[in-house]
Image (cartoon, rainbow, N blue to C red; front, side, top):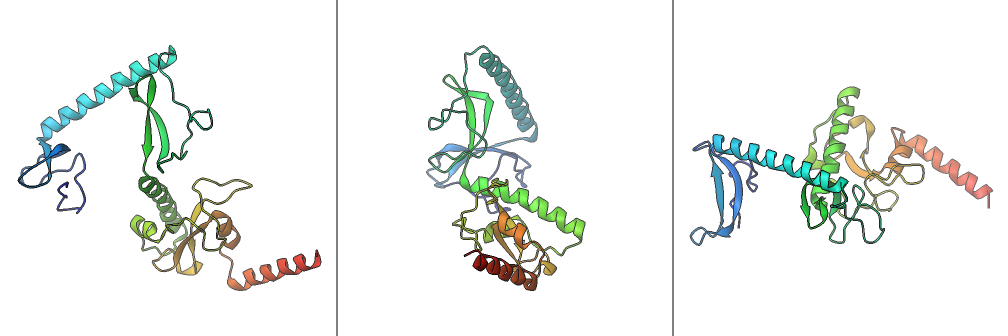
Length: 233
């Protein structure tokens, strides 16, 4: 078990500072202490930590330069998706649920360029963080009330990814003329703003149709569509 940061209540992250001696967290060890039953931890002085970061950066920079040269010479390759025979694309899904982020020339595995894959949880949080930034900007520009944070948007996101209006699965990034299934934040009552209890996630397609229209207008649109549909039978 890993010891938790008493301030955040979460596992320590590289760069966290210890208040009692000002030392900086580097990493958890791979061995568990028989006394505490927790993983050993490596802490460095601020000076040593700075040296570690510089060394790590220089090493990564040298590796990147070397691997890019090998790639140009045809000695190193980007692995392709075995299903499509093409290079992996951003957000492409792997069998274990991880999403492809990018190729990484800072390291290599055998004859292939390194790859960065992120967990479904991290992917979801990343997308929601981007949405939150847009919501915050919109709220500020239009002077709309707002009392939410990223964790709240994450909490109300449907675990099954289904849009509560259309019943279709929402897929991040699918926004074009044919597919508008990307999740978006909906203000149930537009005038109330981005406040807790007034928000839900729906597909971009439904949000565009709904927009800031009132219930009366939406009802008229619905009955108009129904009238046209009946006439066409």
